[in-house]
Amino acid sequence: MKTVKIFLILVLVWFNLGTFVRANEKDDLPPTASGPGTGVHQGQNLGVRLITFFQKNISPVDGSRCPSQPSCSTYSLQAFKKHGFIKGWMMMVDRLIHEGSEETKVSPVVFIDGQYKILDPVENNDFWWYP
Amino acid sequence: MNQKRFLFFLFLGLILIPFITQTRAETVVIDSQNQFQLASEAMAKGDYRQAVYEFKRFLFFFPSDPETPKIHYLIGKCYFLEKNFEVARESLDQTYQTYADSAVGGQALLLIGESYFQQGVSKEAIYYFEKTVSEYAQPEIKNAAIYKLGWARMQAGQWQEASQAFQTVASDSPLFSSSQNLARESLKATDLPSKNPTTAGVLAAVVPGMGHVYCNRYKDGLVAFALNGLFIYAAHEAFAHDQDALGGMLCFLELGWYSGNIYSAANSAHKYNRAVRNEYRKNLHQQYHINVFASPQGPIGLAFKIEF
Image (cartoon, rainbow over all chains, first blue to last red):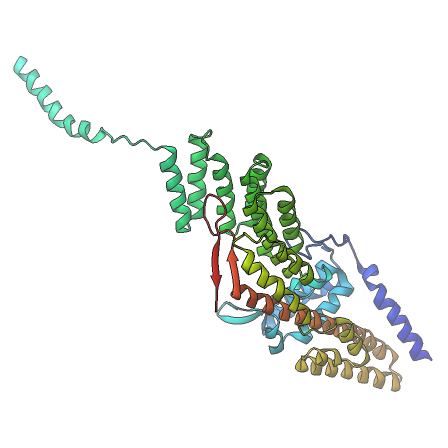
């Protein structure tokens, strides 16, 4: 029973976390003539702070191994900024799951800095939000 | 004394004569035809920036020339060919506003639509092609706009509407034959294989990873299953050992993995459908490609490319 209560509290916290940690965010704008998904969620939410910390302190030591362009941390940062904490987190997890050879069947491959990388920006993963 | 003065002036003359002959420049007269030819050649060579300069020079020196409307359009077209779409649209919009009552206005509107089409912004492309169809009755412009409208509707995945558009191209238009083929082929697109994003999401919710397997992404499915399985197992073990705080944290992280797995499955289905449709459109483009903007100047020219 205690476990169930803790679980339910965490679910409530999770789905409201975007509200609690959101700061200076604006509503998503509708798609503009320059392409879908150009809304602004430029707030410094928790996700942005975590990824920024990772990029400054952990990534330089760990090195870059990401087969995609942009890198996973940059992608996550862009997703958090564009869509807020909750949706950004889901998109980050989606990127971590799908960054593999199977993605080359549905996304283009580009040659950057002497390497072939899968072109997979945020717009490649939220295009269907804007029919 | 007179002799000395004579020698001085003779010496001066001998020094100055070469300069006099050098400063006598050749006079060239450039008329509007020459200037237009210069600009057109730059455009034909692909030096669009230089072409814009020369076209603007034309407008400066010959503001009242009858070719002025065409020049305004060509400036916009140079930006378009350079893929500077935003600037192209601004220029073409000014051309449309200034010459709305003439064919040049229709060409400008059509090219605005094409710029959106090339950028993949189907909604705007459709708007401008429809606007061109409704405002311009000249057959060449109207049929080109209808033809492009069909392509834009295909790009937007509106296959039925695309077929209807292609069917309205006039029978005496050079685009008629291609349009009839495209009207038929676009209807076949409704039978293309597809994956249902809702099904993918529900499967992922029931068993993490199943949604990816449904979308033929087996490795991704395995990753999603393994990650969610590990976190669920770890959380269960933590609660079983009365480590509620740890269990709570693991549950919190697992919520992220679980919801991300559902989103990823649905996203995979959408990407699959997009890839299938894009491949189909690419094949149609290779089979029935007609560039309605082939002519670099003057009225809209048409170029055929049909591969057998």
